[in-house]
Image (tube, rainbow, N blue to C red; front, top):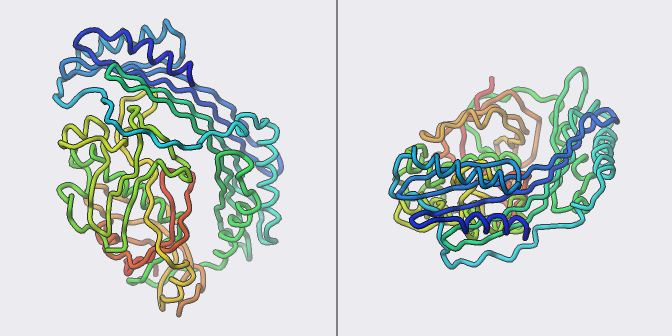
Length: 446
């Protein structure tokens, strides 16, 4: 990391009077292995590095980047950023971040064991995952995909305003999609495990989960249409949270592209809903101590007991809103800082999922959705998505159901949340999942 910070420091030092410079340097190594029918279907080992340079003067911003750490190339990027600045439209809120006095959390996010793990061993994990998935149940006819993936990322950010920050993280996961067959019918199921190093991964659990989720859907039928109590399992609730969290970006709000425009301080959810974005939680797959502008990340409570308390901001959107950055700048070296949630989750409740289901007389457990991202309108909040899962009858899981849609609005769904379970689980994304009971959603089946 010292080398990356040295590069950033050298070019930040070239700032002239009346000019702000920000330099971000990234070095990333990734491995991805896919197994299919006992063979390696694909193996990718990639390394990328680059430098992004942002120059701000008189409210104008210029940006350029290079996909190398070569000093001459970085110097050329600086010259190009200065040239691009002359064509930019002035913005009174434009400027690089300044130190805010918040110290970065001390997070243990890097594992040398991952960087040192041989590629052959990673290949073996993918092959073992496929084999174990096939062997998990006699009805498993095949494995659509069995994958191992990891990344080692180092980042440094420096600015002429005095920011000097660096971070280093590792992460890996395995995932399997099982194919279950019975009486000419085929169903799929997904399982995964994640960690900071290969030793954290539970391949057997991922395989069993994929097989269980596939086989329990065999014999699925369309449910009757109506309004039902709906239970979202952790994999589904995390996807909804990721989308909902995106609408709490200060940038989206300021552009009028969020359903929460002018709602700050309002009750936007039921009282059991507390939504937190906390990239300082080391358990989060996307945890990090510093954001894309080099400021310390922090725990931000977005919805507190149903009340909308704050949006997430980078330094520019914060200035426009008359507030301070929430340490939520997101970016790569090839882009300027955006804004986004980084590790969002619901505060879990005290009861187990089985206890919540036991209290439902007539409902549906949703274990999978399709087309969710294209089926949600972030401005109106309307959504309609295909779904599959299990009927709930008299407090017990019953027959599997598929080929139905659930529809409502994000606003109504938030107010309809009756209870949140205790099974919080981080997934390989920027959100954690947890079992959630929705009082009533429209289900369209037969």
